[in-house]
Image 1 (cartoon, helix red, strand yellow):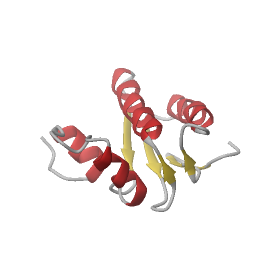
Image 2 (cartoon, rainbow, N blue to C red; image 1 turned 90 degrees about the vertical axis):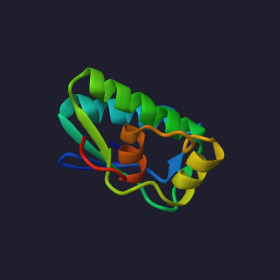
Image 3 (tube, rainbow, N blue to C red; image 1 turned 30 degrees about the horizontal axis):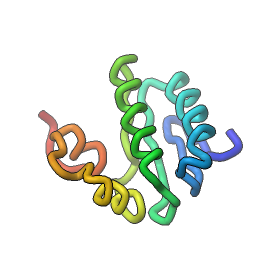
Image 4 (cartoon, rainbow, N blue to C red; image 1 turned 180 degrees about the vertical axis):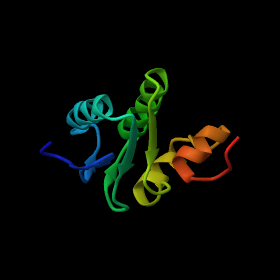
Length: 109
């Protein structure tokens, strides 16, 4: 995978997670999810993010759920990812599952 680095069940995403590069990231993520039952997604605090990345991650969560797989962020959303979540209004009214996925908040239910 040219734009990212894979270590066992961890996929490290590239710096550019915006609409210009999201198609490549989507393809890599789908290939990765198809090869593993449990995926951890790692991204840098200083990566470039827009709402296309948030949409991709939400679609990946749905895909993982429907195929009996697990997907998680290596660390809670921070930096530009957290900023996009705030600006897009996504943080308002988050479900317990959303809080756990994006912010690593809440316990096991």
